[in-house]
Length: 154
Image (tube, rainbow, N blue to C red; front, side, top):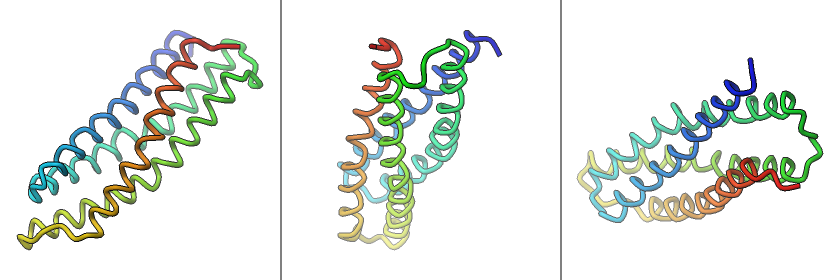
């Protein structure tokens, strides 16, 4: 595969990864701010599906295409910008894994509360705060990675 096609796939994949993350966070946050249990149940179901369809696939595609781009372009694997990018990517992925588990728990609690016509339990809100706390470093890690990929500072 040539560099341009591979680079396009890498950029497209990163767009899906980052875009799904931002979109999911936006809708999940505002559904929760509404405190409407039925809306939260619907949105959390969609967020979990989007995470599995887009984030899970692109989180695998990114390092594969990135590795081949580095090889094709002839960049040194020891480059500082590349080491920082990989480290930040590992940080973001380490945040994402528990977020997936939390989202599934949040979804299940919201669906159950909507079905029962009850309020969300206190555990829901603890998990939701943790979900936010994990999303913040992942967001900033990806913003920094985008900069490093474009600037490639020595």
